[in-house]
Structure formats: structure tokens, C-alpha cells
Length: 406
View 1 (spheres, helix red, strand yellow):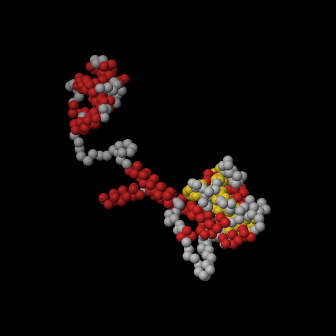
View 2: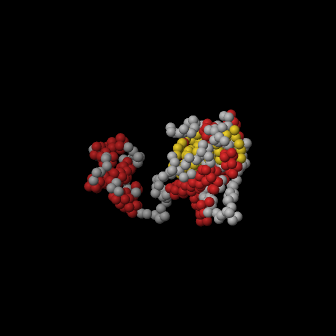
View 3: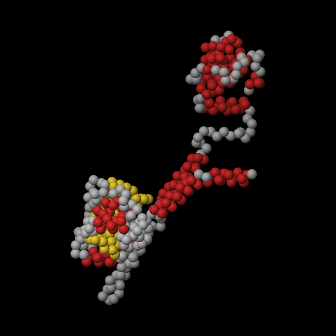
């Protein structure tokens, strides 16, 4: 029997967690389905179909008179920028696949070049720039207003905020921020202009027609009439290092080594927070001090005198003179009503006239004793308690047996 009770107790402990676990499973599944995968061939590709492709963006740019040149390696992208006689835009949808050394060489591109990086992380930003830093990363992209001082686009609202960027302390170049830090522009040392976009949503086919996403994407990529589109979907190996005159390659320096990724996914914080909230909810639900008192049978029989004494001590400790006197009054009304042949719950309108007819007692005096106000002092409580006892004895003398109404 006890094992069955233990199983029921364990089951009651698990029940509150089931909805939370179900909610977590649905949320994580939906997030995984909706989250774009940069290593997919269609991800932000100018020929990519599907929700994460960018064919729709390529068509909008072509309508604006922009010529798109697609390359699949960062070395080809840098070479294409250098071979073009006029300023161009270099579009990098997946900067996380570029080697750190290649990212640092982007800062050496010709002046007038615009480099647009999509969702660059802290490693990519620090490798390419000294003026901007990644502050935090949100669970999902959010729609924000452009900002009054933003001249990068005419889109009033766009889903550009997922990675949040900010100007670092002592930045060597001024940084322009839009969409609450979801978009950053900086030009350092007379080099190219870098534009960091904190979310891929404005470029994706599934989101490009929402809010001002299309306007934002076209404005960022149509500044120059030629667009070099780096269609890269896997991590590049380190670029070959130049040989020394002796024919040997120099040893790789420590700063060029690619730092390892964080072992913790960005959704781990929210999962832990939800589990803590569920634990707190269960603890509150199990708390014995919360809610009304639980009515439970006493494990042993307690004599009435001890019960009355214990209740009286509790009332005295709480200075609850009113409830204490009301307990005595309720018992007195019940016994007096029984003595005059009335139901126990009879009100003053019937009980007081019956008492007057039975004993000749003044109804005002009897009403003050049985239904009067609360006592203000312990002396009043003791005085009224004694008068109630005398009233009950006067009414029930010779009529009611004391033992019948305990």
C-alpha cells in the first residue's frame, strides 16, 4: 500500500513538469525548423529557392540596375573587387566561414568599397574591425525602428536586430548604429566601408516581404552598380602563407589561429531559465504555508477542555479578543435558543423577544451580551465572558442539561 502511495506521490511531483517539458520541446523544435542553416546550398544564394534562398533579393537588385557577380571563394571575391575599375559592393552572407586571416584582409580592400557582412559574430567582427563589438545575441530576430540619425536606408522598420553591435571604448573610427544596434556602419583608416547586419531575415525569401526588409536589403546592396556576391557554404581552409627566400613557409603566428567556437548553444540560457521557473512553481505549489489551511484529521482524540484551552491561548497570543468572545457568544446563543425552544441559528429579532418573554430580561441588555461589539481590553473580555456565563445559567437553570450541549 505504501509503495502505491509513493508512486502516486512521485507522479504528482512530475505532473507540473510535463507541460513545461512539452512547451520546451515544441519551442525548440519550432525554432530549429525556422532557423536558417548557412551550410545549406540555398542559404542566401542568388539562385537559391526556398524560404532561406535569396533569388527574390537578386531579382529586386537586378530591377535596380545592379550587376551581380557570384563567386564561391573569398580569394576570388577579393580578386574580383580589385579587378573592378569602379567601386563595388562585396556581399558576405556567411562571414563565419571565412578564415580569420581572410577576414583581416577585407580591411585592405580599396577605399570606396562597401563590405556587407550578415550576422557576423564576435570573432568575425574583431578580426575585421577595431571600432565595433558584438554586445549580445538574441534568441530570434526582432523588428525595430530605423532611428532618426540613420542614413543607410529609407526603410522605417525592419527585422534587423538579432546580433546587437556597439561602438567599443576608444574606437579609432566613428560608428553609425541603426535599428537599436542591429545595423552598424564604420570606415577605418581610409579603407572600405563595413556594414554589419545583425539578422539574415531582411535577405531571406521567407521574410524579405515583411515590414521594411526588402527596402533595407536593396538599399544596402545597391549603393554601387556592381555587386560581388560571395556564395560560400562551408568553412574555408587557412590561406597559403607566402614562402620565405629559403623556400620555407613561416611558422603560423598565434593570432592567426582560429579560435574554437563556444560549446554552449545560444538557447541554453532560456532552457535553464524555464526549468528554474518550473522548479519555483512546483515549490510554491507544494508550500504548506501558502493558501488556506489544510484540513486534516487529528492523529489522536483530544479532550474538549484541552482544545478550548489551546484555542484560548492562541487567541490570547494573537490578541484576538473579538474572535474569542464571539466563540463564547456563539455557544451561548445556541444554548439559550435551545432553552427557549428555538433553532440554534436564530437571529436577534426572534431570540431577544423570546428571552424577554421567558425571563423578563431587558432585550437591549441581552442583545449587547449576545450580539454586541468586540471588546477593546482584556478586562472587557473577562467581564463580558462572566456575564454571558451568568445569562446562560439564568436561562437554562432547571431546563437544559449541561451535558447535552457540549
